[in-house]
Length: 305
Image (cartoon, rainbow, N blue to C red; front, side, top):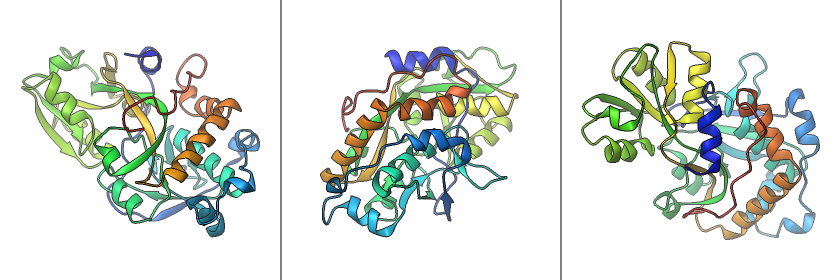
């Protein structure tokens, strides 16, 4: 487990977030800067006009006047719609707003709620410009989409109902029914480390959580940032053991758009240098993770990025 995942493993035991969001196609929801994000967005950089190359994706977004982001509306601490204000809040949401400001000069974002099964299609058909959605970079996915980043590293962990005993590591899942999100890295990881486990899948994180509470499986394997946030808001669930994989999150882009990928990677470098990335983490994941913001992963450091 590398440094980043170790930080998460040691300090994220009370965090939570959602996986790939609610199912299928969904309405677009405006996500504008909330007052609490004012300081963060105030210091977020704006690209020079010369960086918005003629005919580029960046210029297209600038002319449209808003950034279309594939993301979640039900992922606490990452990208969740506030039921009172209607704002979309969290780490991924803040990143999307900061990228919008870099291109447009203001954080005008429209979030299109997507699922793990629909992200590639949304990018390829131009429904969204980018995806910020705990989108783990893999060589297989990189054949269909481009990835800027990585911009964060997490890892798979295990959630069980409070009081469950005998499960502390993936090998303990052998011979048991285990819940996983459809089309997520949890499935091959379980097959590798607990080949005798029976895997049942559901399309979204809320469905998986409900299945766990209904005893349709004894454990739920998902990204730790997602599980920990769930456990924070639902005390009947607990996260056990430490993350047993490293999952680098990338910013999903349309495949083959090298110009836009370089532009987004340049932006990532700038927001890290300006402390915007670190502030976005502190305002979201950092509210339940003790200690300073972790060091951002090196851009282009994993296969597929």
